[in-house]
Length: 184
Ligand SMILES: O=P(O)(O)OC[C@H]1O[C@](O)(CO)[C@@H](O)[C@@H]1O
Ligand SMILES: [Fe+2]
Image (cartoon, protein in one colour):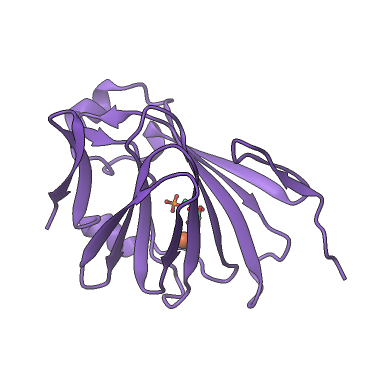
């Protein structure tokens, strides 16, 4: 039985070692995500918006768990802060834990009736995301936002519902501070 995987989480939330894989999302990978398309098109398409690192030692086996960290770069497109794409789980009832490792952020969740909620993420904060809730993180600070996560390996990703209307709220800078805008 495998009880240790030979992987490590460093102070900045980076994973290394066995069974660790990473992916990067750049501005060019996220067309239509941000509300200000003119600002989006004026920016460097190679700019990294966020990176995800994943520790996977079970594939997508039912009953297995995945562990990941997401690192969102500080920045904005127009007035809207850099954020992850966000998703519902393909198997809708699958829940997930998030916790803040470093930086300042907002967790946005939204149910299938487009009811949204937001909560601040800070180092050490713990967030339970129930099934049937889309989830996204937003970096509202000047440093990278690093968030850890643990979720069921068979959860999968569903981006289709969000591709049409997006989340019902957006996190934007207003008078120098983060504000929640309705996107209904
Ligand atoms: O690119 P997305 O769909 O916003 O997801 C980013 C990552 O956040 C997680 O929810 C946890 O970090 C993973 O499931 C996912 O890989
Ligand atoms: Fe998820």
